[in-house]
Amino acid sequence: MNKRETSTTTGGVGVTGLLGVAFIVLKLAGVINWSWVWVLCPFWGGLALCIVFFLAILVYAVIRDHKNRKRMERRRKEKE
Image 1: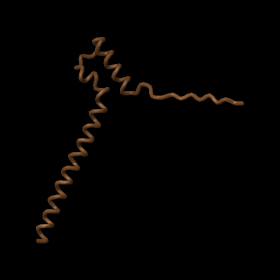
Image 2: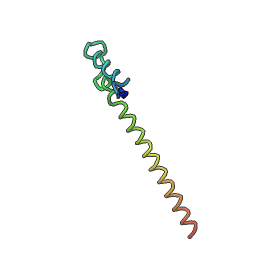
Image 3: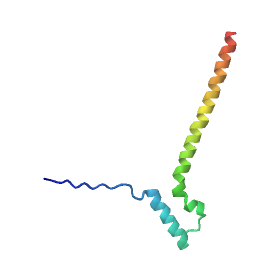
Image 4: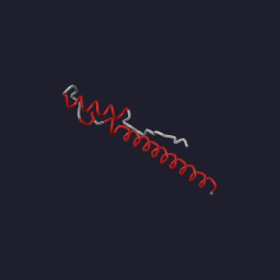
C-alpha cells in the first residue's frame, strides 16, 4: 500500500506584518523618530481602509435613497 504524505502550509506573516515588525525594530533602535501611531500603521491600516470604504458605500446609499424619496414625492404631487 502507498501512503501519500501531504504537506500543507498555511498563512505565515504577510507583507504588512513584516513591515510592522520592521518599523517597530527601527523605532526601538532609534533609527526613525516617528510617532507610535505611524509605526503601528501597518497593523491597523488595512482595517482603517476597510472602514473608510464601507462608510463611503453607506454615505452613497443614504444619498441615493434620499434622492429616490424626493423623486417619488414629486411624482405623487404631480399625480394629484
